[in-house]
Length: 147
Image (tube, rainbow, N blue to C red):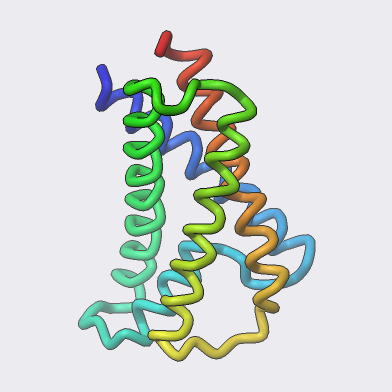
């Protein structure tokens, strides 16, 4: 049952986050789409993959990171380190957003990523996207499962 919770939480949270990022990308005419940015970073890394394979890998990595975050949330909730509340979901989202921003800074620097995406705007939307991710996970756990 725990694996099902984790997988559904990761799927819903990552999907909601991704929808938000895609909508913000459209609204601001900027490349804020995490799977696409991951594809570009993979291409620059010299990975021996076709463009289609790197696009697929970008999506897989994006959703796998969602699983990693949900595994951490799940452990915190199940061990009663953090109560399963909306406010704690907000805090988890902010914390996850900070971790995500730091991860993207490292990936951009290591890959020597050059773009006009506007890093301040990207990181601002990324923080909000992680809050959406965490609150979506709270909703899954609260409404689909009795945690």
